[in-house]
Image 1: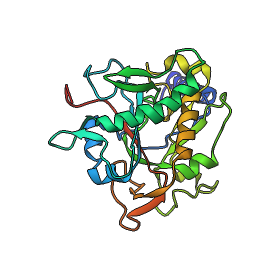
Image 2 (image 1 turned 180 degrees about the vertical axis):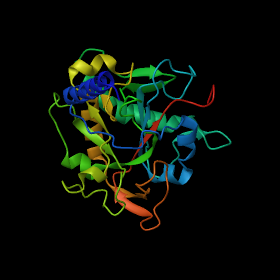
Image 3 (image 1 turned 60 degrees about the vertical axis):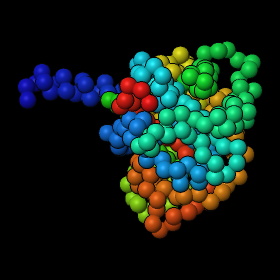
Length: 290
C-alpha cells in the first residue's frame, strides 16, 4: 500500500467513526441486514392459524421511494395498525396462494373505532407533519426505517418483546427511543430467554424497535430511510400505540421461534402467554398489484 493510499484509508475510517459517534443513540442492528423480503414473501408466511392466534398486527413497509404499485397494501415508509373485535376471527383478505390482499371490513372497523381513534386523540392538538393519512381506505402512519447500506431494518414476522419494551421504557419525548416497542428476535445465542434482558446478554436479543423520534427527524418520516435499524415515528403516535398495547390482556398465542425472521412455531414451547401482538416488516412488492 502506498503512503497516499494508507493516509486515504485512515481518513475514511476516521470519518466513518466520527459519523457514527454523532449519530442519534439508537440500538444497532448487529446482523441480518440481508434479510430483506417482499410483502408477498412475508404475508404468505402468516398462516390463518397464526392470524387467529394474535389480536394486533403492525405492518411496516421499509422500502424507500415512490410507492409501487400505487394501489399497494401499504405505501413505502409507512406503518399500518389493525386489530380484532374478538378472538379467533380472521382479519385479512387473501388470494389463492395465501398472500394477504386487504383487510376484512369488520377488522377495519375495529381498527378505526379503537386503535386509530386513540392515536388521533393524542394527535389532535399538534401540527400535521408526520400524522396518519388515509391510503386506499386505510389510516396509515409515516415512519422512517433503517438505511440499507448502514443498518437496514430487516424483514420478517415477529412477536413483540414486551418484557424488553417495559424494561427499556423511555417516556421523554426528546429521547431518541421514546416508548420503544422491541421486535422479538434473538441475534446469536439460542439459549437466551427472549424476555430475560440483562447486561450480560444484551447483545443477544433484538435491538430493533418501533420508537418515537425527536422533532428534528420528523421531516423525514414517510419520505426516506434514515434510522439505524429501527423504525422511527412521531413520539405521540408511539405513546398511543404503547399505551394501547399496555391495555391489552396477555393471552396464550402460538409461539414463534425467535431465531428465525419468518414464522416457525417453536417445538419446545408451541404456545406462550404474552401480549398478542405481531410486528410485520417487509420491503416493497413483487407483484404490480396485490
